[in-house]
Image (cartoon, rainbow, N blue to C red; front, side, top):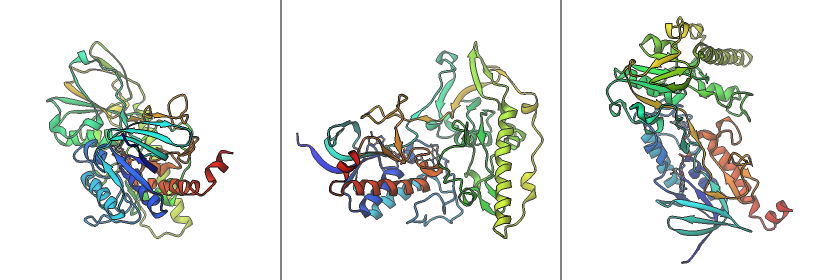
Length: 416
Ligand SMILES: Cc1cc2nc3c(=O)[nH]c(=O)nc-3n(C[C@H](O)[C@H](O)[C@H](O)COP(=O)(O)OP(=O)(O)OC[C@H]3O[C@@H](n4cnc5c(N)ncnc54)[C@H](O)[C@@H]3O)c2cc1C
């Protein structure tokens, strides 16, 4: 069987693969993008039906194309985010081959042997753009024998999919809070287990929080603040975009719980950390308001004052007298949605490029193996890296490195 030869092979045609295709193309680097499904597939089939982008249309996009069917402050529905990337790929003429899965990448002396569902390819460079959110993490806390439907948030679609009864959502990042709110609005009894989180204001003084993150340099932070690696961010563009406010959700009937712990005999236990976790989210919220006020004052910005943004509802009973164990049957809980995040899986890459936990060792996406690159990972170069706007800039950097390495003698010089 003949082997296809290509200079640079990009694996994955989500936003990351499309972004690097644009930057490789503009530098004249011959390349091919392989996608096992469809372009931007995960925006279509790994997200719930009502999801909208977490950032407004002016922000959650690539610099060279607007969302024409939406105003700049709209939160674009996820199907239209996928359509945007399909249109973008077409606009730049990205050489994407869909329906081809890469099954292994094997490091060889001066190239990579790439095995795919459609034959073998030899590539000088490989860019893994397979996404940060690859393998849903679903803790095995509640056994199947408990007779409760359990799904990960990536498999949640809408309330009608859930059996009759109350639903427990575990995890209060953006996915967990949005899903829990949707279920509550649909008339379900909802329990929400809340861990440590950041909770930015949706808007403050007339500006969306993504604008403030830019102005305050937070998108460009190079590493997470100490001890915040496991802190999720609770933000939502749903229903026009509102600040996530757990006290308000409790006032509307949501049952708040601390972090889910162990399970025995029909009873699920929760850490006594609900009030602390909410206090921490409040502190994060208030610190952003403080920093925004400070920035506005220092830069003479004429933005309307918003003192009411500092007002909070009283702590609900669930915070002052927290539930530490819950008999799931007595509570009427028939389903659990684990909104507990994702792991990465690079087991299909055979190269000396990973640490002992299987995480890529890299510098801004340039791995220690010449010719092997990673794109779209959280904190690849900075906080924005796994988001639409940030990945485009990381892709520019990687494409420039790849183009440099193609200069005669460059690879030998960097190896020596
Ligand atoms: C629920 C949720 C909501 C989000 N909302 C936003 C938001 O509003 N704004 C924002 O900026 N970011 C958001 N993100 C973060 C991020 O933008 C998305 O996760 C985005 O899909 C990441 O793009 P990507 O190209 O890096 O990866 P993906 O979109 O996951 O694309 C990777 C592609 O690689 C393909 N692939 C994987 N393995 C192989 C293989 N072996 N062979 C061939 N192809 C392969 C997959 O089919 C997929 O199409 C959200 C993330 C989640 C989970």
